[in-house]
View 1 (cartoon, rainbow, N blue to C red):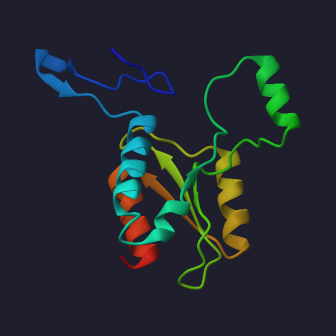
View 2 (view 1 turned 90 degrees about the horizontal axis):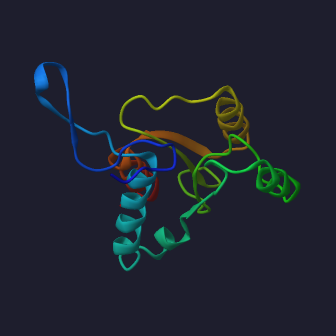
Length: 142
């Protein structure tokens, strides 16, 4: 079984109470990959979508790598995705990806969200790919 960035199972199903199969909740990584597949498909329709990118601030790292990246400017709590396109009165769109269930926003993430909103960015917390894609569609008026 494949495991995502946060150690969650990403494929198959598990037995729940009474032995009934339960669907496994997709990992944040799997959900984010779906968002980028959607974006790649829609770049021809609206080239602004091609500007969407991932901020690689999360994930498990050893201490030496974490220290090196911090020295290079990596900051904890920064939202996962950024679309640097001015639209609808905002300077750009930030998306914090969470799993469909059990995804929790940290205090540091909340601080970043509020700071970015204070700078006229739209910030969306998306529980799964579907919510992230819907946020992109609404932001770009697709």
